[in-house]
Amino acid sequence: MNYKTKANRIGNESLAKLGMRMIDTVDKSGNEDAKVSKFYVNLVDVNARYQIAIEVGNEKQVKEAIDAKYNERNVAFMQMYSYVQGLLNSPDADMKAAAILLFEQLDKYGKNFSKDKIADQSLHYGIIIEALKRPEFTVAKIKTLLTNGVANLNQLQLDYELLYMGRGNTTATKIAASNLRQEMEKAIKLYLDEVTWMANSTDNEAWITLRSTIEQRFNEVNVSMTRKKDSSTAEENTSPPATV
Image 1 (spheres, rainbow, N blue to C red):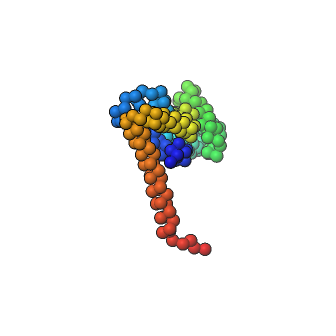
Image 2 (image 1 turned 90 degrees about the vertical axis):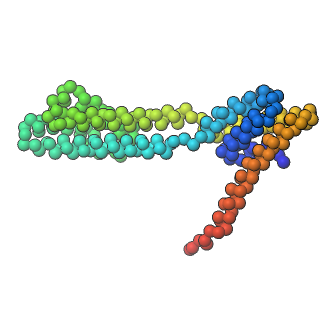
């Protein structure tokens, strides 16, 4: 059986399991020489990085949080816009003047600019909020009872930007498993070659046992793949015929 070829054929997650099982096998083997070889040390190093890369991240939860904050920010702005727009017809001259002053800033990009690019939307919100935070609008905000509303919109904008930028930074720094796969395969093959060579050349029972156990780890991965394949085939065979 060509175990090195098998390492090329299994999936990313199966390769991660194989790496963990190989290391666990060596650690429990009692073969101290096997634990200090440079190829084993290399395997441990590559495997540690590969396991991090293969981890299922929380991308879905982060996206949901970003979408929720995006919607919350939009609702807060729309409510403020409609509220101030309604005050433009206030019979109170001072209230109307305050509304006119504030509405000029709120209406810079219209009531709804959600069709603009995501980056442009955040830019628009930022410009509007920073304008409303200026001292010359303090009295108008107090008159229209919008001091807390503007502060809330500002916080929603900050929260959204923090989530959005955080996701971008995480994506930029995380190494994809596919980028490390070739290195992981090579580390496994090099160590398997070493164990095989030591078992054959020394005829030492510890190395022979280790080789056999590692080969068993390969077999376990193969059985797992076969069962998955058999299960898929069974599902196909029991599926109802397609209707035309």
